[in-house]
Image (cartoon, rainbow, N blue to C red; front, side):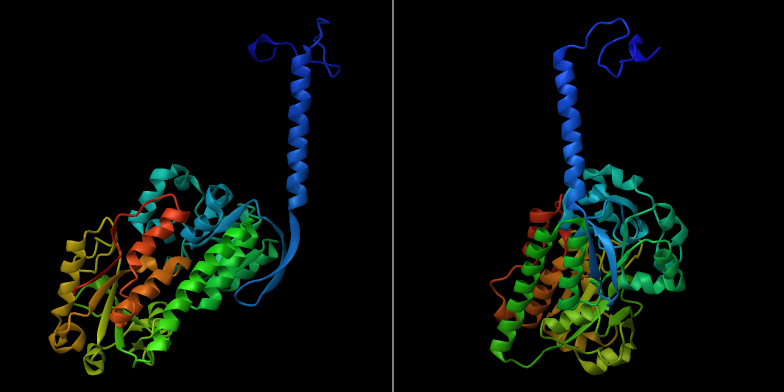
Length: 390
């Protein structure tokens, strides 16, 4: 006996009792089947095999738009490009790269999409928990990974390729216009969001071009700047940057990065080197890492007072009171999460304003950062993302 005691329906549309199926139900069934078949045909017709070249120069073929995606990083960029439909395609993520790196941000997204917590976790490259076996077992149509993640996976990367899974390598860490735009268009192509990707890429290009043009037109000497990841707090010198991440952002914004020739990508420098360079501007990068007692707090859930109190603590380091940046109140805090993303043109704007205040009086970088969320993302961040002592 079938559910609710109903008898099975014959292929000729009648019950075993011989009673004919009502015309309404037969018509509805035909319409439903026809609609489903049409949807299937439309989806099949829309899918196409294309040749893609990722940011590392690898060329390969895959079918787009992908239906099953493993995403290693750049979660907000992916969501902004494809919306909820793209999030529905996720069958695996590197969870710790979101939940551990930006805990307040993760919790904000969980409130609007609790199912994020149910997406299978493939592990995190930086702490050596990434599992190639897990990724392959999820049978994705594509894996979208950051270049540094692929480098960290090492020889095991070939196992993913050998399993027949296309890997699209993208990179927002290098902070170059070329890679930012290429990564955005690649993700858009893979998930079927090319129009949105082009719109967002052009917004980025326009904002960065505006910064560059204003600075070039002014023809001023480049101010020197020191950037530090402030997680360790004033007692211990944190990593700085070379031609990478914040170092590259500072360069695009017209600054002379004092550690560019000392650090290749990122790493600590001796305190004496900072004192000797006498930077005119100092920027401390921070996040929601409340586990660090004196680290620079920035980001969601962080008040202006908290951010400023932590920022002032760094100015009390031995010898810093004599630095031009401290003497003139040109010490700033910026949110670490506002880098390595297509929306970090707002960070370029903030650096430019910190370096050339008179050239960017009409621009509010933090407001622009929050406006990106209003346009493309489902959360409304509340906190402190960019702030200065003066």
